[in-house]
Length: 168
Image (cartoon, rainbow, N blue to C red):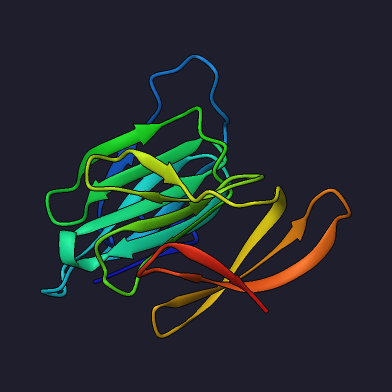
């Protein structure tokens, strides 16, 4: 199972589904995501907004698409929207090693999207800003952020088993 941003495909090459916004305020920018299911079927989703991130939760057949206009969580097989939020402040999203959840970051928090599409933010003893996700090392996601109030750039790991941040 895979999802990736691509350039506009040649018309008719893939089955396409447009996921437009119902709000009056929406960007004129479109982006395309190519989905590949576990059985190899490929299709294209078309979304409004600048592309930001895609993430896959393979064990639930879910894919999250983050654009400048919102976050979509789809069932990659049925091509149906399971969750959408056009007012999101999320800047980053990634899957987890268990392949069943999504980790998100807005400007100052890191959280988990659960099975009911609720976000639970991780409580920290300090404030953070400019969160970046790097790569996984086992069950730990390498992260970096600015630790407030001094704007010190800090590197660490998000442990996806106990949902804590370990600083380097």
